[in-house]
Length: 369
Ligand SMILES: NC(=O)c1ccc[n+]([C@@H]2O[C@H](COP(=O)([O-])OP(=O)(O)OC[C@H]3O[C@@H](n4cnc5c(N)ncnc54)[C@H](O)[C@@H]3O)[C@@H](O)[C@H]2O)c1
Ligand SMILES: [Zn+2]
Image 1 (tube, rainbow, N blue to C red):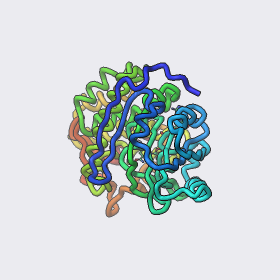
Image 2 (image 1 turned 60 degrees about the vertical axis):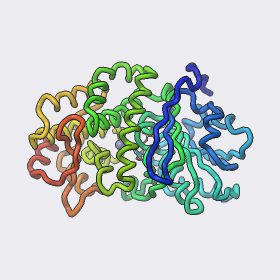
Image 3 (image 1 turned 60 degrees about the horizontal axis):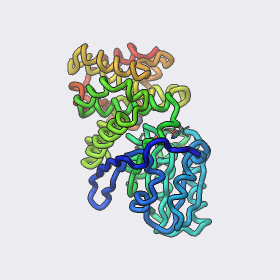
Image 4 (image 1 turned 45 degrees about the vertical axis):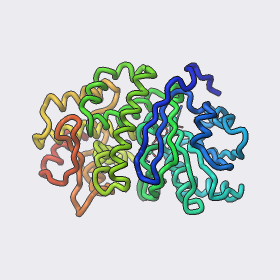
């Protein structure tokens, strides 16, 4: 069990994801998982299913459980790993809900990283056509990305995230104290997504990241809280305007089409998602340079920040031809054309299918083996 060193709940930042009747708050702060009063405000229902995994549950589930002395809490602990983000895992969660006769007023608590959040969220979307769930993200990536926006789902042997549903949580409660136990590598993977937000929408935030990267890597609490808050603000704003990815939400895939090529060509092993996104951001910047929308100095800033964060900017272990094949089967291909998120400047991303194929091939050749 973890003993919190920070003062509980010194500051709680609250943001709102504005989706009409599906709106919900994002709460960010230290020690929130042991703040019974705050949790009680956002977690409703008499019956709670606490979903976590074998790594995170021993660290934080007891703390959380103690906050709900008057509720029935059933725990479902999944094995740890992306390979368990499956329909079988969802089936297990549904079995537990049924076995315990949970009703429509049940609430699912998703305590963990993106794998737990996506799996538990999808179970919540399916059970009795949808029950409430609360995201309690414990990785940096989950706190800035996967817990916000309502995309839930699991992998299929035929591809990642192929099965899922849009189902918004009733609240996202990000306890930044949990990041203390995260590995450096997972921390850096989360920072890749944070850099992504600066590149998409906010040059001032990007510049602040350049100044503050050492503090972030040292896990300085106020720097981390600020980075998480700004990232969530940007994601919430984009999701608020385009919940189901008809348009603008695709901007959030900056670096991801290139990144997915790395992940799928390497069989989703070896590289963390955030590492692949890091290299993908460098490639998106280079491609933007080839198209003349980014200058050499801006590309260098992107590469330098990724490097200082300890993220890769190349994928030498993936063959260029194989990377291109994997990009073509990416979900985001429309009418046979790979749509890319590219940059018109730092803080100004756009989606386009309008580029010479030669530039894409050259970018890939320069970054893959
Ligand atoms: N739904 C979305 O919008 C969305 C967005 C981005 C990513 N995702 C999904 O998120 C997943 C990746 O999420 P992730 O990077 O959080 O990976 P993850 O859930 O696998 O967590 C990474 C590792 O950290 C461990 N961990 C979690 N919290 C910890 C803590 N506080 N201390 C110590 N260890 C801890 C986990 O057990 C795991 O081993 C992928 O499946 C991806 O598809 C979803
Ligand atoms: Zn991502």
